[in-house]
Length: 189
Image (cartoon, rainbow, N blue to C red; front, top):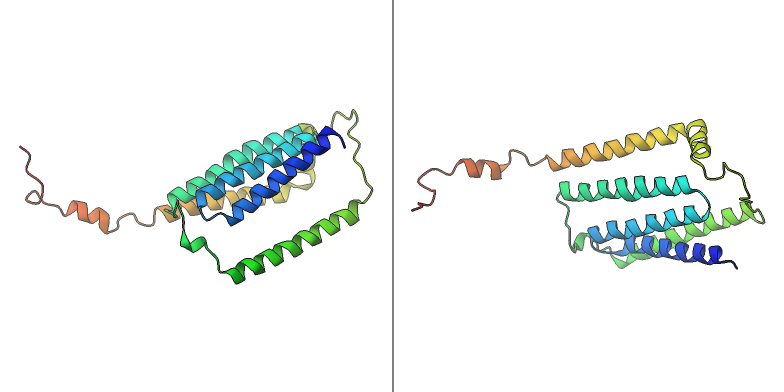
């Protein structure tokens, strides 16, 4: 085994461990921070695969923009920041989720091993391997529709967070302040 393969395995373990922490932690902000670790490990994996452009896109878009959008959504919707009993699922649901996740993971791994068994990617001296030109050509040639759908989905999430945060404008707390008269105000003196 080479050092790159060992580092790839370690980063893969970090990504899987952080992803498990995202779905098992009971604090939303901690889940978002574990998501940063998982996405950062994925960027490291892309770097090891000589896809520098994709790695930087992962860092700038997912680690930067998506996690910040998630944290702003948490803050704007007044979701519980600390420990929340609502995030604690019954044991039966946890077991069902673990079985479903294990089965799905097994199917994906079996499919990948079957599809790419014995195949190797030679990186060599191809200048287009992980270049921005190759990624842009692939993105705008065959992935335009999913790219635009994802853009609209992120925009809808941002608009939804703003709408949810503005729900309580004009509530009783605003009228309570206005109903205080001069006789109720403390005398300074």
